[in-house]
Image (spheres, rainbow, N blue to C red):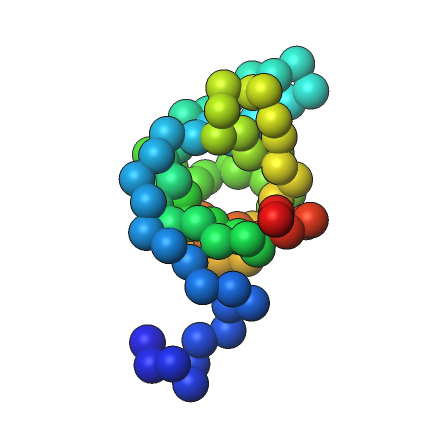
Length: 88
């Protein structure tokens, strides 16, 4: 993708880190891998994106903190997400 096609608000940094999607209020977790990260969003890799809701919470630190997210795009094994409140 050329720079003119870039639509992200902030630059993403490549990263390889464990994360988890919080599937329910009871704290059920779906493990995933964080592939890149920025203040405004991230790209996640997981076994399957089937049945992943359009909005969910993500934790990067074993559920100590949660970030509300919205799916911007998806493939069968990856999600592009935006954070509802960008981090600092």
